[in-house]
Amino acid sequence: MGMDLKAIEERYSGLAESSCCLSCGGAADKAKPALGEVCVDLGSGRGTDCIRMAQDVGADGFVWGIDISDGMLEKARATAGRLGVANVRFEKAELESLPIASGSIDLVVSNCVLNHAADKSKVWAEIARVLRPGGRFVVSDIHSSAPVPDEFRHDPEAVAECWAGADTREVYIATVAAAGFAEVEVLEESAPYPKGGIEVSSFTLQGWKPKPRRCCGG
Image (cartoon, rainbow, N blue to C red; front, side, top):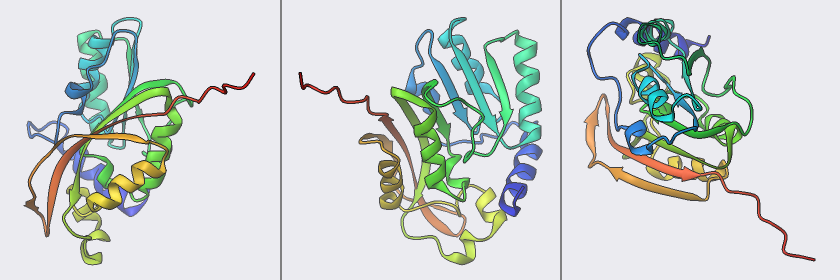
């Protein structure tokens, strides 16, 4: 585990039993999972959204929860077991390398987690890989008003605090587009506000993985 991931794991394991709110947006609520869908929550935390989505998709659907924090994963698994939710699975993994088969997911959601990733291009490539053609993502995250100074961007504690890893809006949207998502919609966006040593905005994006084009030739 790299230095940044160690700082993130330690911070969020320590928060697993707290009552603080850990995310921006509300991607799972906006995504409206449907019966029978297979979903994944990147940065699933205590598992609250995963368990709610598991109820939404029903017995024929399934939900993956991906997190890097042992404390959060333990809490999520315990809660799912206590509630008898069988169609959910929590796995420890880095966002750049998901333990999920290609083309098997209908919906990817995430709340204020992707800004932690060191290689966001790889994360979005993984989102594109696991989604089936026609599948969608709803991601809530932050973007910075200006490029984050290196003194913050390379500080693992500042990155773990969910701000120093932010990209500008332009870079963020370009990274999503480069992964192959042509139809991207901004569902909501906040005015800039101070966060740590910079200024950021929260926003929620929705997009679809394109379906293969059919050849019209005879």
